[in-house]
Image (tube, rainbow, N blue to C red; front, top):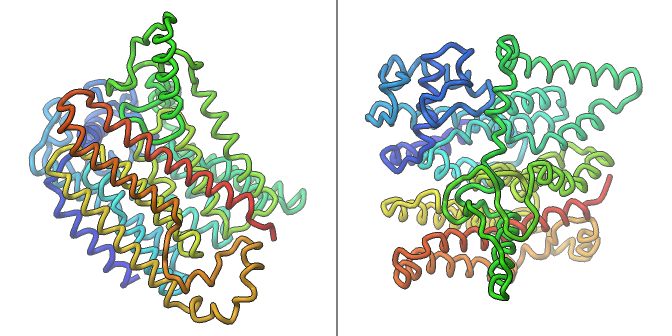
Length: 519
């Protein structure tokens, strides 16, 4: 734990240096939540519209904001003033909110500690590098501004209990996580199937008793969170705020997922048919206008509903659920949960680009298991981090995000190279050369590859070169050639190209899950 604290201290120092940097509208969102939870009675939290940034997170996060508001009031009462605090940007509010994010990362620290404390030192340190020093968390939480590190910490704590075979505690912490942020519910089917099969499937009487206990724990968590709002008869209003389906299929900046290609196909078909003389009406709302409308307009292809995206996520999840049912291994739960969040990111409704954190962070714990997993993680983490670049669009932050990604890539390369060329696995490679084919059939990495060092494949190399070309065009050539015209093209290009990469990762994960042998 002492060594881990050093890693955390180094990352915290960097985060403190970034306090004066760019802040998104999410900064004012969370300041307003501090104000409304402090100034208003609980019965008005989900009705208040003083600011356009209304409360739309589950109750436990609202209670968390209420807790923080106690200290905010002591430091500067205007921070929690519902009227005077609107768009308040004094140094006190900036430092307070930035520091609360850094302090809440201690939850992430504990989750990392629990998941790595039983690993050997090399694997443990490698995971610390990948998670504690993640540039994605720096960009999203400590520049753009959110509390993802805190929430991901709760997820990691839940996974750590499941990997230890303590299913009841794992289910409890996942229920807590859902009451903090409901978007993590994408993994709920995996949790349900795994817990039912691994914890409750043990005979009729004992199984029913365990199912009852597990259900009671989950119900108790939700009762604590939602009970006061049920008492006030406000549960419908809370759910309306939490699930604003009217925001449309895609966010203003398209997350790099499956629906990017659906939109492009629709626009391409509409353009082609107009050229052929067909009267194709242009939708009133525009995906490229940067606005979030009340619908998801398509000119040619069928309209997509929230129910359709839900069905697609479940369909994509089905191979994983089948595996979890047939062979509920604790050692596989992190991989299955990672895959679930990848499915949610690709096929979900109104997905934000920031949601890539949900699968990149837990995947780090899988990356250290084999050379093949490490290669995949190295490539995916670069793609996912790059997809966040549009969040920091001001010129003064450009060197920061580029340096963060470059440093992360270099450190990852060095760490993975050391892990897979100088460890005991490499020394034993010669002795097990004859068994390589058997290991391949079992889904394990080819240990002989470790003699070659940490090298990614040709497809991945070519893709990363293309990523560099996309950035050069978007950042330098497009403004030089087109000026202020077609401002949406660079964002669209980044979404499409990163979407291809994440689709490739999803196929890679799906293939691994399908081919993994049952015990």
